[in-house]
Length: 151
Image (cartoon, rainbow, N blue to C red; front, side, top):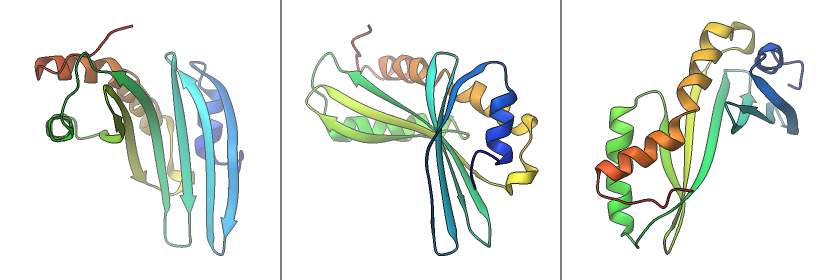
């Protein structure tokens, strides 16, 4: 697995994708890991392909740090994340870090597909759905009465 992967090539051909770059590639026994990054719609995506003899796991990720207007309990954040995830089946939001008034949220989408079966009909809608997650989550939190400092 490397920059010759079909997923990487499809992103390379997409005129709206920029700064596509390999981060790391490694193989441990029969499992290959390929991490890469790219920019799309002013968002910095991370991608991973994990290949083994049984399947290929593909994952796209966006990470954001939000500043809360006031400290909020971890339970309140988890409840909001559970509600958010329940309404958005294609992406998953997780709390990566929580300290004081700062929360770090990871938005991701995973799918199992052989690399050669991946095509633009799969990738383009996925990155278009994920790109607005950051602002969508802010709006969602505000509806939940969790105020975010907007920059």
